[in-house]
Structures are given as C-alpha cells and as structure tokens.
Length: 399
Ligand code: CA
Image (cartoon, rainbow, N blue to C red; front, side, top):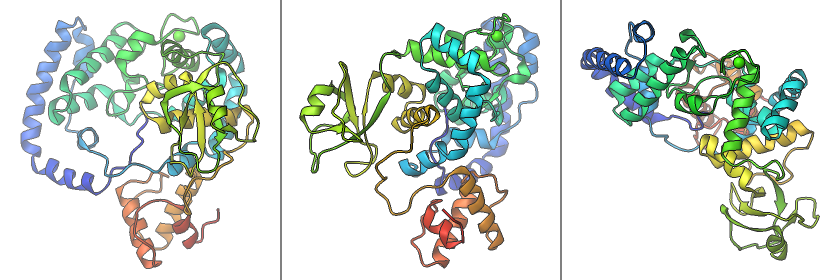
C-alpha cells in the first residue's frame, strides 16, 4: 500500500472545497462516529476498545483529501525506480539482511519464499521497518468512512477488522498507526489481510507486525505464498530485444522461454534463454526502455500493491540485495530520476535559492513541485514540477 502517485494542483483545489464545507462536515462526523460505535458493538468489539479507539475523532483534512484525490499524473517509472531502489536502500537492505539472517533463512525454509524478495518488500514498504505510519488508523478511517463517501462499506470493514486485531490481543490500540487507508505494520497489511494472513513467527503468541520483524517478514512471505509464489522460479530478469521487435508484450501474455528465444529475445548479456517455464514480456517504458521477462511470481508481487512498477521495484531491489548490478538498459529519458538523498539535496538547494518548499523531508509534495516549476522557469526550462536530474544540476547538484 505504498503511495505511488503524486498529488498535484487538483489536490490544492480539493482542499479549498473541503475547508469550505468544514462546519457541516464536523457535525456529520460526530453522528457518523456514533454509528460506527454501534457497528463495532454489533461486531462484538468490547466497548473498552471502541470507546478508546473512537474517542475525540477530529476532522482530518489530510486523510479525507488523500482518500478523494485522483492523481493528476502518474509518477514516471524512472523516477519511481530511482527513488525506491537507491544506493541507500540497497546498502541498508544488505545490513538488515545480515542482522536478520537467521529469521530470513527460516522464513525462506518454512514458508518457501525467497528471502531476498521478502527483504526487498520490507525495504520498499517501510524502509525496513523504520517508517511508521502518519495516521492513527481508527481516526483516519472514521474520517474516510464518514466524510469521503468513497467505498464507505469497504473501509468500515477495515475499521472493524483493525479493532478485532486489538481485541484478539495481537497488538495494542496505540500501535494502530499507518496509512490513511488503514495499511499498517512493517509490511503494511490492510487490517482484513492481517486477520487472514498474519502469522506469529517468533512464537510469543501474538501476531504483531508492528513490533516484531520476524512476524512481519513471515507474514509478507505467507501473503506471497498464498498469492502463488513458487520458489523454483525467478521473479523475472532483464532481457534484450532484437532490433525492431514488434511481437507481443504484457505480463499476462505468458509463453515458454523457448518461444521467446525463437523471437530473438536473449538474456541481457546475450545468453540464450533456458528454462522450462513460461513468462510474459514486460516493457514498463515501451520498446525503447528496459525489457523484462516476468514469471507468475511477478504476479504474486503485483497482487501485494496492484502495480507493475511496484512489483518491478521489489524484484530489482531483491537482485541488488543479492549482489547483482543495476539495470543494463537505460530508461528512455534525457532527464533521469533522483535518489532520496538527491531529492533532499534538491529541496535544500531550492530553499537556499529562496523558494518555499516547507520542510525539507525528501518528499515531493505540492509545495516542492511548485518550487521546482518556478526554478525551471527561471532556468529557461519547461515547467514540469518533476524532481529530475536537469533541474537538480541547474541548481548545482551533482549526479
Ligand atoms: Ca509474535
């Protein structure tokens, strides 16, 4: 449940609308929360938990906005990959894998999911357990259910599931911090997924994906296993297309490696494709960018966050953790993406040059995008608001 899209100008317009309707929203929130209390009671959640969970629910502009905002544009795949698979995350991941090597080896052996994949998922979801959620889930979900109006029944189910996890004694109420939509824990499970697939791997009697890395890693592995992960297959690998390739593509159009070989596709190093399984040809940036053959394991990764870019980031990060190098092919752009460290440096450089970006946090929100646009104009560039290498260099950054 990683947020993959950037909210743009449309978000700013929505804030204005939301604030204008605030008094009415506050009144309807109060009565709606009362209704949620009764729903929780009917679902068998003890009053002692619901009372504390839904006490003093305040209007949360951010949660409502995030639940309503349609992304203005999609993040470019090269920005997404540069941000998620940067050197820092690779080095951190190798250190974390050393630290947790016994657990990861046991997870791989007992659950049957490659430990590099499990570690990569952990790194992408919460930066190896470092990133805590911004929202207290009962309050955020109450806002989303009562004020957003989108998929209210679905989110009500997630709220009840979250409270049940607390009622089951798996985690404490104060640990229910996560995304506005309710995903939480070191591997960002939605509450209903948690109840279905979380496992107690460290054997203390609690499924605790917040405080126990072992439980979180094993639960993510369990999710992937149930989604069809097969440890005898790779997730996929980078390939080379023959010049002028115009054959089929798409992760779902799977065919045998032999048939791809007949179309002239090879491993990226030119070696002939070998293996008794089928794969689909993934072209995340079209025929002129990096190309991959991806297996059914890629679909298991995809199901975790329903995005091909997400599955690719996990797969590639897992390869980097294994010691493989960066992608061989270049993304089809003359303005590559920035790492997290470079994004932060870009924000600092914007500040030094007098642009308002709020707090430098490495996250490219509406203020930073606006500052980038202004800086681009001043440097005679097309205003995009995108944190790319060109504007970074124009401000003195080194790539
Ligand atoms: Ca446990």
